[in-house]
Amino acid sequence: MKITKICCIGAGYVGGPTMAVIAQKCPHIQVTVVDLNAERIAAWNDEDLNNIPIYEPGLDAIVGEARGRNLFFSTEVEKAIDEAQIIFISVNTPTKTYGKGKGMAADLKYIELCARQIAKIAKDDKIVVEKSTLPVRTAEAIKSILDNTGNGVQFQILSNPEFLAEGTAVQDLLNPDRILIGGDTTAEGQEAIQTLVDVYANWVPVDKILTTNVWSSELSKLTANAFLAQRISSINAMSELCEKTGADVNEVARAIGMDSRIGPKFLKASVGFGGSCFQKDILNLVYIAKSYGLNEVADYWEQVIIMNDHQKRRFSSNIVQTLYNTVSDKKITFLGWAFKKDTNDTRESAAIYVADDLINENAKIAVYDPKVSRKKILADLDYLESRKAENNANAILSFEDPYEACKEAHAIAVLTEWDEFAQYDWQRIYDSMQKPAFVFDGRNVLEGAVLEKIGFIYQGIGS
Ligand code: UDX
Ligand code: ADP
Image 1: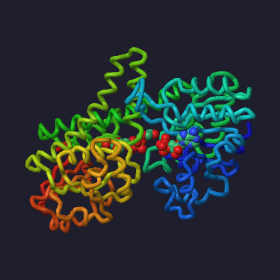
Image 2: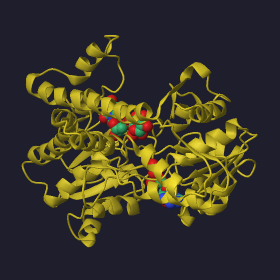
Image 3: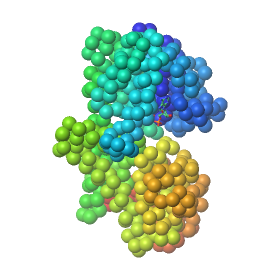
Image 4: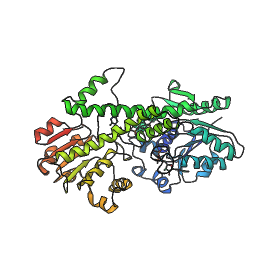
């Protein structure tokens, strides 16, 4: 099949950057990204590239180059589906908040709606690609809907999970470790796989493009995220032991990371992992294992989440305990709110849970994050439904300037590892704070010895 038109349903964190890079690298293919959310589409079309809805280093330049040439953002979902030969589904699959599997299973509502819409509109054969993270065997459900409600046209379903990480999305898309494409073992399935391989081969070396059956591809995505999250929970578990024994978790991580079988990445102890994927995918894995009666498998992976929750709670309890067992009416400054640096995404950020705990203790939280707005911070807290919205609004002070945020504070907590935090004039910050001045470094990004010399009482994670 010669591909001239691709459509992507969902203009979010996955769909937007992925399609921008496909469009940049395949100028002969017209790529249309559609979304029901008109505000989001308008932002993607904003003349000022600073206003595109997702902040990723390098993304603005790529959108600037391809938009209007062969990259389009639109709310005309049906038209785009009708015209495309390949349709990517990149809609959100949040954890279910109701019914069976509540709090664990992925909610496939949006996926099913997409499948029904594709079935209704398609008048010629199409390749449908699952891009969102999905439970194993979702392709089967999509196929069943398409075949039973469609107009008799042929659909091939491929699984092509996204491994990009936020903050490095553009680099991950331009130079991926691998591209994974799963499809049917039939001749038609293999042909569809090859069609998608040819799209990626415009810029990815073919030895990095793996093809598998559809179930392996779906499960590989969950497995990759579970393994990565497990490494963080493992090092975080050791961080607590380090604090008790006098070992330093950074030294331990370095020592084990030099073992080539272990490797150095994803061994940074922290206040806990966040982001839209790790927790959601592991909960989903746990749910799937349970649904097959594999309770030991489910318990094994659930422990990764339990450890992560413990790490966040331990951080907030330690702040309260260190500040003489009360933070009531004390100003505590958060440096960072995003779930990691170089992104404006806050989903499942540890900062939300630490703030929630401290607000329960009547603290006032001053927040400075270079990319996160006050509106977003309050929305994150309101989503927890721990208290009335007005009480969150009263407890949160937000600042555009870090020095203002730190003024008169009793303590500073580093929640995100933004590079700029290490560059601040810490003497100036110290001089403006209440004494004793505490720093709780939830990311181990500041130089403890330098801060202690200035006069701070400094506590990192795991030392
Ligand atoms: C992750 C996967 O890396 C990516 O492949 C997948 O497609 C989506 O999920 P992402 O959530 O964007 O990507 O961020 P990632 O860099 O994996 O970080 C997740 C969380 O773990 C962040 O909160 C980060 O701060 C934390 N982290 C990461 C640590 O605490 N320590 C580490 O060593 C690494
Ligand atoms: P992800 O991180 O997986 O990309 P996001 O929540 O950032 O998730 O983006 C998913 C997008 O999919 C949202 O902008 C949402 O409006 C869009 N969406 C969900 N269902 C549909 C649908 N049926 N048609 C078009 N867009 C949809």
